[in-house]
Length: 114
Image 1 (cartoon, rainbow, N blue to C red):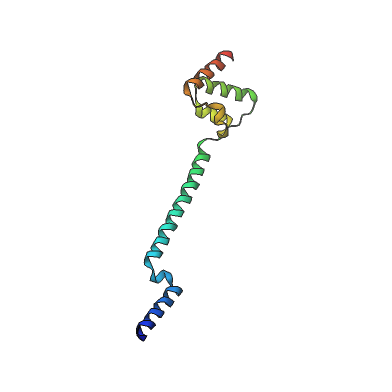
Image 2 (cartoon, rainbow, N blue to C red):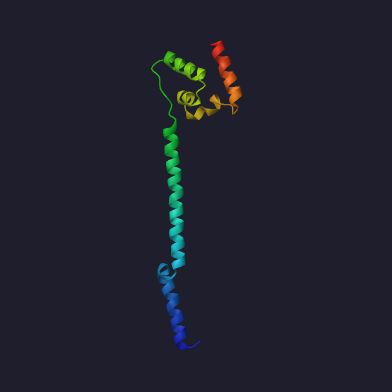
């Protein structure tokens, strides 16, 4: 290598080490894309959590009789959302077995025995 080529090579290496984002546009644009993707993922999780929290809230009742009346009415109408609001969103296993026909029969049997 000639002397001027060596100086140019050394200067370009030093510049890249000191200011990599100015000299490597591909790398800096990749950084921006990654940052936007990470921000998007975080926003999705935050908004999904807010939506899930706002979707079903557990109700409170002034008396046990009022709670039983609401439970019986929701069971008679086979309303899963109302039952979830009575028991709370964490008790989904208590409300649904995963088989709608079985759930309906079980609720009808409960109402007939009530």
